[in-house]
Amino acid sequence: MVDARLSARGLCRVFPGGAGLRAMDLDVNEGEVHALVGLNGAGKTTLMRLLLGMLQPDAGTVRVCGHDLRTADPVIWASVGHLVDHPLAYPELDCTANLTVAARLQGVPSARVSAVVAEAIADFDLGQYAHVRAARLSTGNRQRLGLAAALAHDPDLIVLDEPTNALDPRGVIALRELLLTRARRGAGVLISSHHLDEVARVADRITVINRGSAIGSLDPTGTDIERSFFAMVHTHDEAHQS
Image (cartoon, rainbow, N blue to C red; front, side):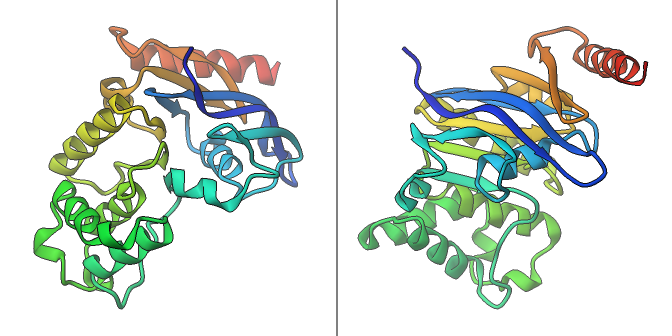
């Protein structure tokens, strides 16, 4: 039986004015890449914040690696790697120091920190920036640093919001291969993206979100995934307005 790395049931958070998330169910299984797609404002980032405990839901439950998020011991976060909104880095520290801090905060044993940091730098081609302060990095290289920090401790659950933002083609390919490798080793991966073609290259499942609800799924192997996406969103919008 496949184990769920992440599950949500009846998740709801409505903001003043009516925007938000409504009655969302979601699973991310062991060894699976599950993608969320939707237009701007559909609710993807809100969902990820709720799943990671960054926002409190109005209703519903979340389980992370088998633990109820409301009562889970903080140690479970050593099994989670995430990047939501902007990459977090100390601007006055260089890439090596930032990754060292991230590894230690995620519970990597002291004896392994140097090796873990070296591997993360190699994975994201940050070698020439290893001793460059984060404040001096380009937007794309800050994104690489944030992703490296999120994945360095080999988490069982990976949650990434628009991870290819600002990445050049080489960075996109490197991230794709890393996520597929982590999934093959048993991690559950949840990503959001606007790039349907890129999502189709990595996802086992694609969930479409619109107006704060999951409205259906797309076949990653489909021949015209973009057309299917817009048709689904259009149908949902028309039903919502009628």
